[in-house]
Length: 181
Image (cartoon, rainbow, N blue to C red; front, side, top):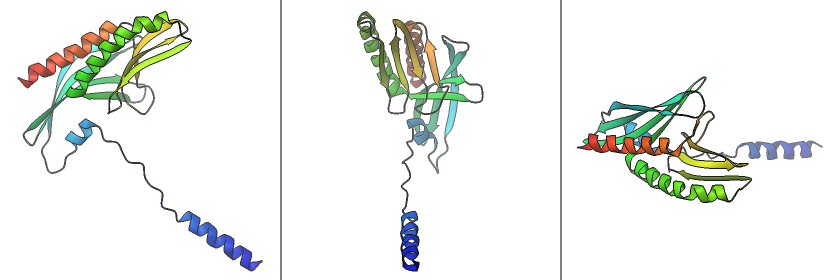
């Protein structure tokens, strides 16, 4: 009996010593640039018009310019205030250009998807930083949306009109290009 208890004790203690691997923390492009050590990083915000959402409230938008070590990076930021905190998307300029291209493609696919009368359909584009833009069709009702952050809740903004998104993203791109001059 003593031998059996010893074996169980040893087996359980060996199992508890397994080293758990930590999930690799995914760093966004903004985090990678802004959190460099040993470098002075300055950022300046340039406010843009609010993004009108389908539900109550609007999302604040701005261009954030980071400068450090002789280099500048530009991000289009969309911030949605929640009940207890806020969610913010920071879309780097090159990703913004890709989002605009993807939005144009989504717009061309929209009518065909609506005509197919699906029970549910979702069509979206996701950046490497987790920003998501797209639309869904559910029981013949359609809604465009943007998801600001990959994780968390209360980080989705629903938009009535795709032109609202097109205007906002193109305006952000134009502002960044003007700031680069």
